[in-house]
Image (cartoon, rainbow, N blue to C red; front, side, top):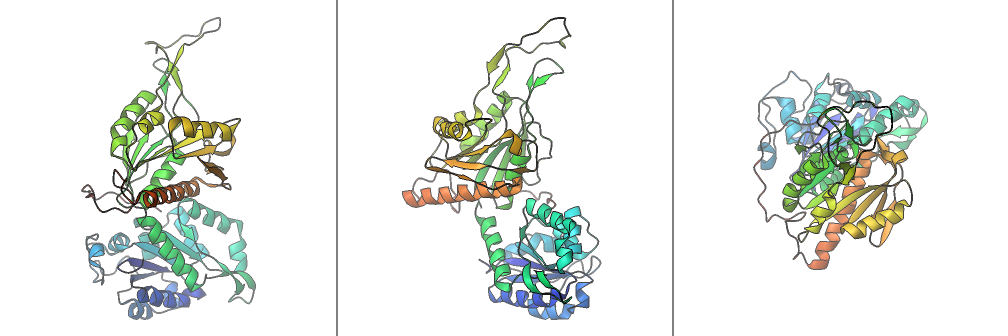
Length: 441
């Protein structure tokens, strides 16, 4: 998994910086090309020359150094870099970014997007999987602010490895030691494997809410924020998928690096999905689509009257059911179900009625509008309830299950019923891409 990959090792100023030397050596032994980026404080513990000898590449220490560095990189990585700005080139070349050790200060700066040095700037400019290996004194790790910062990084998709428990440099004993070398290497390999899992796979995601006009100023809608759909889009993008996000109004911005198709009404979403679905491999319908719309929208603002008013409603088209009904071999369809009662029974009924592969069941009190969710993954032959987690973690769990299902289906069919091209295939030439803005991790 590491052979031919570029792993950027970020070293910050903690006593565990000396252990990063063995990490660099082990990565190179496994076939990775390694670039080390150090904070100024890290150089107080280990000299840059040590890392230069171990990595075989120049060590990045400053934003003001050589802007045309001579890194020894695989051909695929060289094709990604522009060769004009050092920290951008390193960010573009990276297949994975591992921070070991990650001090409390570095973690805090990552959370807030502060980039005063080369390491934090590379992290900010990179879309590579981020592996964070905390190492600090016991009480620093225990602090609520540190725990909150770690949780926020995890919610954004970072892999957190450690810390481990044991003797610390301060003389205390407890959590705070840098994770072991094997654990870090395993995490880096897992991050790379996960990133490649959806390569050349086209994923269609619906997100947000729809708004159905009642008059020129009023709409019928719901409280969906769009956070779950955006988390799915980010996670799929970071796993190498070509993502199309058909989104109604949302409380969050669509992520960079995906094709964003904005819509407002259910009819508009229906049209956009009907156009995109035949060309997709996986469709995940996370949007809260209005079931009904006013039979006739008023041309003028409705004035307040003395008595009650009734509004005639008519059903909207079922966007997901319509797409799934036209399923082609190898496609996977996933729906979301938000229920206030009889959740599991209703989710199973939705699964069967619409011909879906998976339904993600949640409840309004658990997920709508918030940053976390508690979901149950419902399939034909069982259901699995997940613990409360961030919506990004939910997205990763959903994608993991989709990957498993598609892998099982491929093995069952001998790989013959995989149209359009499924995960891991090289049969389809990917569409040409232009250079897109990188998202902040």
